[in-house]
Image (tube, rainbow, N blue to C red; front, top):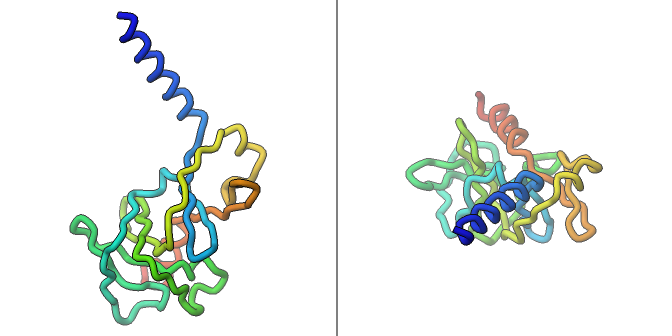
Length: 157
C-alpha cells in the first residue's frame, strides 16, 4: 500500500505544480522569436503541402489539409504593423495550428524552439498578455484572436 500512496502523492504534487505555472511555446519566424500560450495551440505540423488560393489577401499563403479539415495558412507578415506588406519568406514547412472552435487557421513558422513553463507568480509583475521574458529576452506573444479579426475583416465574417 505504501507504493500506491506514494504514487497518489506524486500525482497530487504534479497537479499542484501545473496549477501554479503557465506553459508557453517559444518558436521562431526566421531569426525572430515569438511565443504563444500552449493552451491556444492545437498542434504543430511539418512537411505538409500548401495549396494555393486565388483572390485572397497576399498574407494568406493557401490551405493545408490536416485530418480532413482545411486550415488557412497565414504568413507571419500579419504580425507586423502592415500585414499587406511584402511576405516573410520561410523555407521550413512548419505550421502552428491554433486551437479554435469555429475557424481553422495556422501560422507558417520557421521552427519550434522550446516549451517553457513560467510560475504564475512571476507573471503577475509583468504585462504578460503582450510578452514574456525568456533568458533575459522579451518575447512577444501571439494573439490568435487578433489574426482571426484581420481574416474576418479582409475575407468577410
